[in-house]
Amino acid sequence: MRLDQYLGFSTAPDYGPPPPDDVSSRVWDVCIIGSGAAGSSFAHEIVSAGHSVVMLEQGPFVDQNLSYADVVKQAEAAYVRLYSGCWGLIGFPWTSCNVGGGTVYYGAASFRYREVDFDVSEYFPHAELPVAWPYDYTELAPYYEHIETLLGIAADPSRDPTAPPWGSASYLPPIEPSRAGQLLTDGGRSLGLRPFPTPLAIATVPYRGREACDKESPCIEHQCQRRAKADAVTVLLQPMLLGGGLDLFAGLRVVRLERDTPSTVARAVAVHVATQQRYEIRARYFVVACSAIESAALLLRSADEHAPTGLGNENDMVGRGLCFKASEWVLGWYEGSQRSEPRPNHGPFSTVAFTDYYLDSAAPGGMGGLIYEASVGSRHHLSGDEASVRIECILGDTPSRENRVQLAPDRDALGVPRTVMDYTPHPRDQARLEHMIGRCEELLRASGCRNVRRSGKDYRLGGTHLHGTCRGGHDAKTSVVDPWSRVHTLDNLYVVDGAFMPYPGGANPTLTIQAHAHRAGRKLAQSRL
Image (cartoon, rainbow, N blue to C red):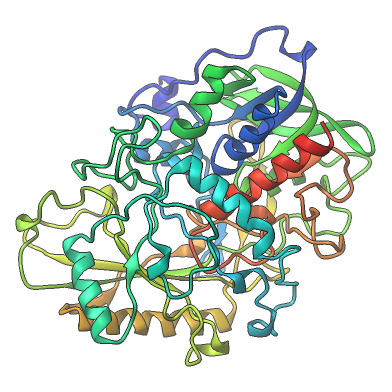
């Protein structure tokens, strides 16, 4: 059997050239593990300051011949708790495992977190872990503006009733509503709601050498053929690779981090997924950005005589506080035919959103969530005689010590312990989600839809919004990293992806992950390198 068949690819994966034979003799300024939203953003700050970065990515480079389904199939699964109480190897510990991470295939939703997301303590008195971030919105606002300028965000925050202050930020013209989006807009207004264009990292006009979106090709779960979507490869990685300062090696799975002294990591030990060759990568600083699940798993796998339960795990907090955001799709049908749609399933996946229920006195505890149009992707095609509207509601879930990432006793084909995602929703979150599903059903009916039903999304399997396993905070007893994402007990190790979030927020997290990574990267570049 060929390697690509074994891994599940329909075409052979492109990992590019392997590291040179003398790679272990070089010492980079910073080694970043993971090339997605967080890793690329952190790298941008370090490279822009003139320092050297080596980036290690487990997945392949992608092109138009490599589908999202290919990438999902090749990434190893994680154990999750089934409804029966048994364990199944069916969880998704990645958004996607490839150069650029989930940004290559995402829908580009780019919400800023609301001010309340940085401290929801009054709405979560039941939480057993602190839900306040170690800094507030004003600390992150300049970095939101910075990453928004790099990406080019199509948005109109003046129409978002709960938008936080956006200062001097400028935005591209928002996406025009799709047919479904217009139905939702009209239906929402009939209920007294205030719909607004979904903020998207998609160029609606030519922007920094990228073409404008023409809505002529699928978007979510696809690569953008016109480079209108601001994925990490297009906007951040390619310019850094062309300009120098960044070395990127794909196909390298980092199996553990090793240290020579109790306070510093000395090297990343990696195995090439195709050849099984082992490499040791050395740097002055190490940055973990593998996604919240795999970042925690890497720290746990890196146990040594100084930390027998894992790096940074002196207080048994690594992996704890796992959050997925509670979410559900709700679907309805309206009069007409999908065949009459101009290019159905093409163009942006979302054109209209609602935050009227973000804080909702009728919701359990007073906190509701976000609703937005969520058109179907390649894996969810409808038949041609159906005209449908699908919306999604999402809400921040309650951090719990018992919801956690752990290591399984068995190992994968590379000899690495498999990952366990142990997650049980809090009853309050389940009640809040049911409340929001009711709001969605009401909105769809007001929009003229019939046969309204939930679509059966199981967010507990992971794969999209991953947060909270290396929590940020001032107190090492309830967190793993400090406000700048440095592991409390190590001088040169950072975790900068969604694992940092002590509360996952009530909106799509990518823009916030990117802003936080820029903040942490700039601090390191200016004060320690």
